[in-house]
Image (tube, rainbow, N blue to C red; front, side, top):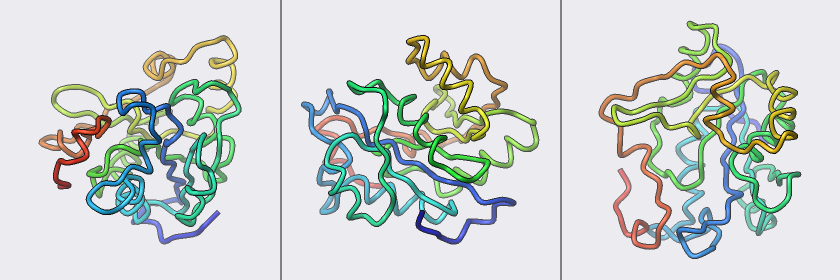
Length: 200
């Protein structure tokens, strides 16, 4: 895996960008590769996440060679037919070599620059399995930091046909981390119209 400088974490963390969805609300296109102000949307996410982690992986199920051009390892789901974010998280925990793994989606180019550090601090302080970002409005379940040791439990959850991220979180010791006033940082650009919005 490509090595980078961690952003003041006590231990190295692997970051994973989930870009393996069907992009249904965008007409079935590969969202991460859509042009956003002159660059592929996933590049914006890479630029935000890479400085926060020691290693970076991209989870994708289409255009794997194109994603590889960004310079990071690309991992595909083993569960077929676009099983959702948990299938990507499963691969993240499978391929990561660090104890902690940070997860973000490919369609949130304004994610907070202190996301990983704050999630890591809360995880440690609460002795939690998983730390999840939340805004005043709601939790942001795909913006999370989890322990790689949860992989066997996630494998069992998926093997039973379960696919809901929130359902998996409910089985774990989780802690929420409030990003007050950061609603826009977690906005998902999942429609063609949203690609015209400015980046914060």
